[in-house]
Length: 469
Image 1 (cartoon, rainbow, N blue to C red):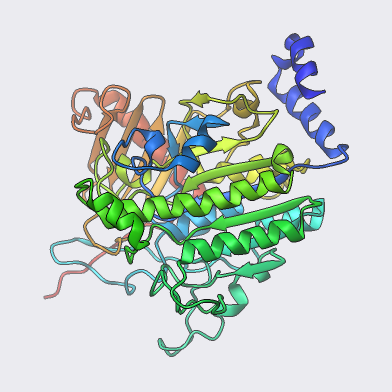
Image 2: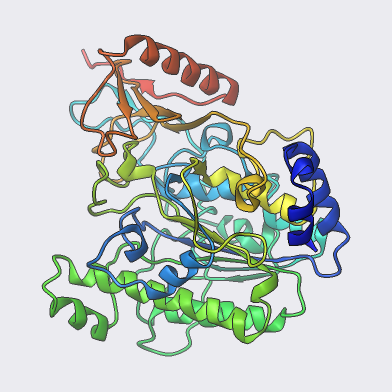
């Protein structure tokens, strides 16, 4: 029905707002609302898959997934570190607006690295319970069964004694709209990827078992129990976060090829295997045709990012540009591709529209529904993406900064000396040539736009350190 309407009513499709309203009406009255699977890797870089052009790696399941859907070449994480991106995806709000701007727990407040002029901004290290998550809205308003499997990292809240964390369990996924929580807690990474994992929210099962395999099994169990739908499965794999560990057979495979980092390459393929198992289960359960699946990462890689500059914890492309692909049989054209910049905050409004729900007028939204891009019915309204990282990453190598991407251009503003760098990403993906001096008017305009966004978002800024006498 949907495809037929699209062919016969092209003149009607030219009005994106009208189409969106019709789209909501169609799905709100459908007998079977679409299922949703939201998959996010941890620390997987833009160049860490075969489908992105890295021929040293094998990711056959993700390669097939991309061929069956739409690949976004210019997909971004909301932050260059994990906790802010996760919070942004859950709420549709930017890290700047949320005040969740660094990985939890981050560095001690007031810490100033040697040779720096500023301390990181004040920050939250958890997602407050009064936040409205996408899981809560899908569960309460659209009747979805909701399951969370994997890394949460949105519940870090310590008590007066830094060794104590009495409130943390009350901030886990089961208190944020999920019927089921397997593995979600305040851990940023597992002590081990082989059982015993020592993850508080994951019961022991089989000694020596590989964590991605275990999590895939838990996802499949949820899908089997809720196959009648509609279901919303959030699978946030702990891979490929440190510690870098992988099955021996995969390590040997990449060692035999002389790969520079064979364990990391093996870990990526191990993650791909786990995702493949979950995707296969959708076929086995005969629900794949009515299931929207999103795949992305929470930030750039800890290691190299191919042609991109820098890595995790930086606002250069290597820290924030990530793999992005979406599959929705019958709605998204297979083997399609988009170079429109998208970001983690877009997930929330997209899933609302998919479920036939409206944004709440009193809640600001920093993302935009991707339905026009996915269905080929129109374009996005916004012109710019914004980033705010006023804290030091775990490696302390980054400068505190904000950034704006508008069209082909990207500007980074460094907060310590108010300097800027300007790059044309179309001609300079590696951000090698700073155009700020040569195109000073454009740099000035973008800086002003970024400043206005920071103000409107209520962004907390770095604290100037006071030199000792």
